Image (cartoon, rainbow, N blue to C red):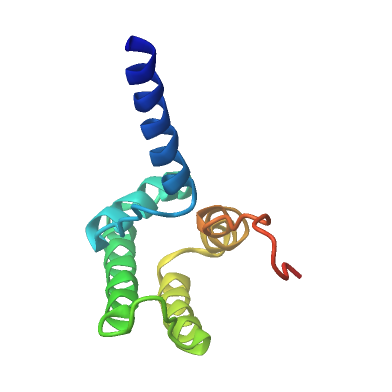
Length: 128
């Protein structure tokens, strides 16, 4: 009897892990959480107080624009890629005005690429 209960609990946890690995149970972070994560990663840029305030504002506007774009859409549909690019380009234009050249270069070359979600290559289908 104990082995059956242990097997059931093990199977339950294995099933939950598989669902999570497939993206189930995904919860979108709030704008504030996302901005905090970005600001934490920007520590290497050694921003002064004025730059920090302006950068926080730029990322808050960026994430709110993305959130607004996604609101009202049918689940599973994606907005036009050009809309995302326009919002990202607007953010980058703001950051160019806030950061010095070295800070902006480090942002584009090191920090921004590390923040992009990593896509898995598996799963079959036409992964080209």
